[in-house]
Length: 260
Image 1 (cartoon, one colour):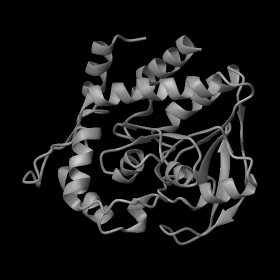
Image 2 (cartoon, one colour; image 1 turned 90 degrees about the horizontal axis):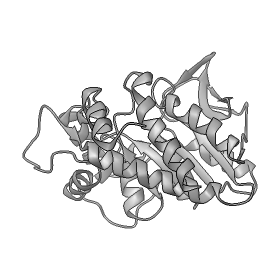
Image 3 (tube, rainbow, N blue to C red; image 1 turned 135 degrees about the horizontal axis):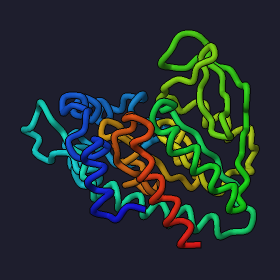
Image 4 (cartoon, rainbow, N blue to C red; image 1 turned 120 degrees about the vertical axis):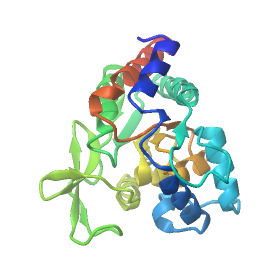
């Protein structure tokens, strides 16, 4: 496992954190859309607080490390690598607490098959080795979602849920698949969901213990964390080259192992 300093340098060099690829304009547009309660950016969550645009920006500066100045409107935005590492460590503690129970039931899902799947797959294998059962409800369920026209199908790769479109796994923010998965479990909810995007939001909204990964332009999950619906959210660029996530994943797995 890399030291904290080595991992920080890796995160910044690969732009998982530091000066990330997501532009300031894109971040602010998403914060404004969330403040206006656009369902696409709520990621399956509802919020008790009003969360104005400035409130969202302030929270994202605190939780993800984006530039706090509302006058910074264009150009580069950032994720604080130390906040990423702190959240990975907190996620490891949460996962370890679940794996310490007898026969825990865990559900994995991702809307980023070209990025975060590289984290989910080895983590899913690890939790099975540590005695967890991975749940795979609603496999094959087909629906037409809010952000696409033709039907897509719920499929699993090594027990990680994703959406399939004519044979290819696809990016999605939609929360409907997770809602359907939880409904099919008929009250026998997972002990933990490890996910991102609407998969994580829907699980947190349903009261399922949830840990998540989120980019700086996905503020909904951070608001969910602030309101206590999601246990931990790790800020990171969620679509860099898959191999770049390996040291982050190694830290997560190593810390869980040490905690058990």
